[in-house]
Amino acid sequence: MERAEAEAIYDAGREVVVEVLLAMDRRIQQLEARVEKLERQLASNSRNSSRPPSSDPPRTLPKRGKDPSGRKPGGQPGHEGHGRELLPTAAVEEIIEHWPERCRCGHVFALGERVALSEPKRHQVEELPALAVTVTEHRCERLRCPDCGVQSTGELPGGVAQSSFGPRLQAAVAALSVRNRVSRRDAVELCEELFGARIATGTIDQILARTGEALAAPHEDLLDHARGSAHLNVDETGWRLRGSQRALWGAFSENVAVFQISPSRHEDHAKELLSDTKAVITSDRWWAYSHLPLRRRQICWAHLRRDFKAHAEGLAAEKEFGELGLSICERLFWAWECFSHTSDRRELERQIRVLQRELKPALRRFAGKAARYKYVSRMARNLLKLWPALWTFTAMQGVQPTNNHAERALRGAVIYRKLSLGSQSEDGERRIARLLSASITCRLQGRSLHAYLIELLSAHARGDPAPLLT
Image 1 (cartoon, rainbow, N blue to C red):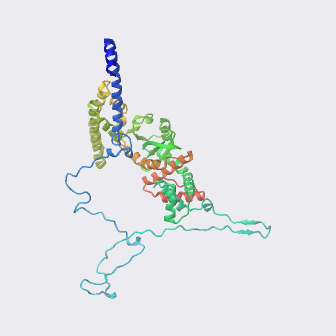
Image 2 (image 1 turned 135 degrees about the vertical axis):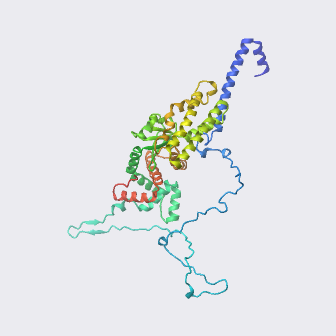
Image 3 (image 1 turned 60 degrees about the vertical axis):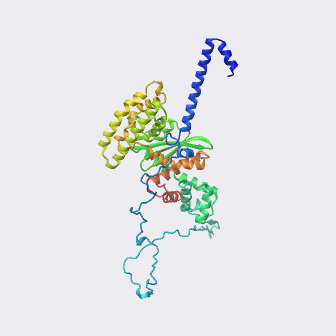
């Protein structure tokens, strides 16, 4: 505003000046709210929100302080070593003996003097054999019938006719592509360099398609088994289909993982995944899970801790709310840590009751309509609404206070999505959901994915029922 304009407003009289000042005040409040919102977005990172650590800019990396003891990093003098254990002699393919040739005094040992005084010093070297594919040529011979003169040709066995590659090589390609997230082109190079196998990128896709088809029945069985579990960890993340936004859902029990790709993160798709399960569901506060009864829910306290940390970085009442929440979280995690060592559930319940008596009145206060609570009232009211679902872990065996189990299981799928940019077709979505389910389930069970895929593809080639993972 120029000086002349200001003087003109002043000369227009008292009412005009008041209106201009009120309009300017409203504009200032709008701009302050916008600046505050932008500052919150700028301060958001993986430690105070649900953003992944990969989205953090370099400046948000935590600075490591010096060890107050002054010790250097790594093993300290006198600590107990953890060397590599030797395999028993029965598991060794070759033994090579090394005898001393001469003594320090100059004596040269003769062959007749090679009598061991005690057990030898053992050193084992593990090495890969020279890897190369074995090529088997199947010849379908022709014969002419001496009676009718018709020519007949031999037929390939069912397990051979489907592919030019055996189940072990196909399983290796599938494991490299899914578990190790190797691209199609890199898989071609690895197969040539490691195995001496001639293979094309299109063949990689055919192998993955065949593996996904073979996994149809095991995937359905995993889904049924997950729905029948006593408790499940459920989470969802983004996915891409030809560049458009989709959602990857995952449900995880102690030893089973099942993935599904849906159009969105809507409640309808959560219902489709969980169906009529009676399991206790551990999840975050995403609204798609609101249809579940509170007695069968456990809210993730790791998510709550990040939310409280974001509020603790605010001012006044918001800072007070965040610091209170962080204090509750730290004591709750300590109580759970003690319980994990002692299994004393009565002591866990006693410690949690102390936290409940402190938290609930505070939530009621922060849920008020006063202006100073405007940044925390929504979360406080939501926690009061979800109150029974905050403490399910104290009474239910096997339920944990966090959803870390699901987040760890989803991490590999998220990395796969970032590297592959998602899927290019609906068939590709179904395929990757089945492959990821098999991969993570094998990991949870401590089972070899490669060995399972060999068994699966061998049965598929023979036309036998697929081996299940449950």
